Structures are given as C-alpha cells and as structure tokens.
Amino acid sequence: MPEFTIAVVTALTPSSTTLAEYGLHLLSALGRKDGVRVVALVEDADHDYPAIPGVELRRAWRFDALSNPVRIARAVRSAGADVVLFNAHFTSFGSSKVGAAVGLASPLAARLAGVPVITLMHNIVETVDLGAAGFGSSRLVEPVLRAIGTSITWMVLRSNLVTTTMPNYVEILRAKYRAKNVALTPHGAFEVPAPPQAPPSPPTVMTFGKFGTYKKVEGLIEAVRSLGRDDVRVVIAGTDSPNTPGYLAGVEDRLGGPDVLFTGYVAEWEVEPTFRDAAVTVFPYTATTGSSGVLHQAGSYGCPPVLPRIGDLEGLIEAEGYTGVFFEPDDVDDLARAIASVLDDEEERARIARHNYAASAGLTIDEVADWYLVHAGRLVRGDGRSLLGDARPPVAV
Image (cartoon, rainbow, N blue to C red):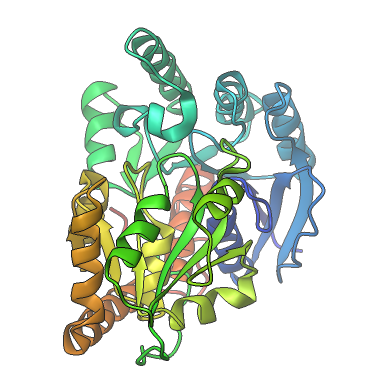
C-alpha cells in the first residue's frame, strides 16, 4: 500500500455543481501517479459517478448542507489522509448564501482536525460580480455580502497553502490580507489530443457551460440570427447553473427553433466531438469568476474562441498564451461581428486554432498534479521531490 494518502474534496461530473469537470480531470491525473493513494471526497448525491483508475471515491458532503465542515473533517480523518486538497469555488458547497459560506469553512475544519490543507480557490470575492454570479446583490446589500466574503477568505487562508489560477488573485490576497501562504497554480489543459482540423460543414457556433447567471445565451442566438445566414446553427451545450434552474428551458421556449440545438448535459466522451464539430466557441459572459476550463478545452480541440473584453479572461489569455477574437459584453452587434470574422476567414480561424492548441500542449493537468504533489511533499515531509518518483519536478510559481 502507498505510504502517502491525499484526499481531494471536489465536485465530480456528472454533478452540475461548479468545478465538477475540473475535479474529474484533476483526480484522473492524480490517480495516474505512482506511490500515492488518492481518496476523492465527493458530493453525497444521486449521481452515477465514473470509476477513476487509481482513485477511491467516497460520498462525503451535501450541497447546501450546514453540516459540511464537520462531515468533511470526519471524512478526511476516516480516509487516513496525510494532506487534503480542496478544489473550491465560492459556490462549491451551496447555492444559498449561508450554504456557500458555511461550506467554505471546511478547509479550516480539516486543518483543526490535524490534517495539512491545500485549497485551490478558483475565484475570490474581490473580483466577483455578486449580482451576476446569482447572489442578487443590491447597493445596500452588496457591502454586507462583500464583508462576509472577506471573512470567508480569512477562513480559507487558514489553510496551510492557498493557490489560485489567476496572477492578479495572488496579488490581491498578498496585498489585502498580507497572506504569505498563497501561490499561483497553472490551470492546465485537460488533455492534448490530435492537432486541430477544419470543422465539418455547415458551420456551427457553439457555447459550452452552465448557464443562467453571468452566462446568458439570448444575445448569442440573436447575434447569429442577425448574420442572416441560413447555413449557420447554434449549439448550446450544457445545463443550467445550480443558481438558475429552468433558465435554458425558458430560453428554448422563447427563442428555440431548427437553427438552435440545446444539448443538455454533455457526457465526458461527447466533449471532444462537441468542440471539434464547431467552427467557433463563444463565451457569452457578462462577468467571470476565475479561470476558464472551457477555454482550455477549446484550445485542446482546436476550436477558436470568441471572448468578451472582461479583465479576468483577458488576463488569462495573456498569462497562459491563448488568443481569440474579442467583443464588448452585452453588445449583440459586436458579438455578431466577432463571430462573422471567425466564420469568414478560414486562414485566421486555422491560425487561432494552431496557436491555442500549442498553448494547451505546453502545460497539462498531469504536470499540474505533479505541482500539487511537490507542495504536499513539502508540507508533510519537508521534501517537495519525495512524492514524484522518477518524474521531473515542475517549476513552482
């Protein structure tokens, strides 16, 4: 039996909970590492979770349950974990304000239970548009919510190490909270399949994700229809955000037609063909809450992105070497222009696909998993190389 056990607290596909897909790929990468026992502490819900080689699955927490910190701490101890890694987002543990906030006390509870804690925070309250993210903020309520968010961040920072995938998040945490236990974590490409090829005809404009809060599809449908091209169809791949149940069904009732396909949940084996069949992936966002796994998938599968001019996404593009065509958020005409520029210029579309594929190939989720093992080794054994076996240690940032 391996001498070292790492517990990973995460949502896991097919759950609609935030970061479920990232959880799947991170667990898969960790499960491929020799000499490490991986225990996934996943949502206790009615899901048929996939078997992941090298990973033991345990149902350990419930969405919106106020008992999550206690349940997770007990599960971490029961697993015999040497270290626990939280794959977290502000809405990872609940859609209600109370459920989400209480859930984020779980890293502190795990540390108080005597287990070293690494917390990957995919977003921070200082950069989240609370109204767009589904928390119904107003001018009077927002200062209160942000104060609560600051308190939650202080709790999360009681982890031994907090990582983020955005450079500006690291800067904010170090400046505002005087945190010395914060580091930048590369997001990593989920996989690097065959190089990009020309998409099939007729052209498809696709968007992928969980919709209804800051990801809205009405403008996308309107923009594509305004092009007046009968050969172009829209594919809306994904589900409602947990905060906005029924959103996509309502859009389909109002705007559905033969030119718009609502796929619903996309199983893991359907992800690659969904991207490869599209000529462009559109990000119809009005805000962002962190790094984008969809952008990395689009890069891996050679599907050029059309992106809003929002700080986080532009920062990610610059930091990780991606490119795309940008549009002004909430401007349907500008979105239509951006989409047309990709559809009508085959040479530019191929250039963007090649560029982003190369960026994806540059750093994989397997290398990111090694990065976490380096830090786990440092926390527990004082030696970052001790868990890597023969692998070359990654460069820590």
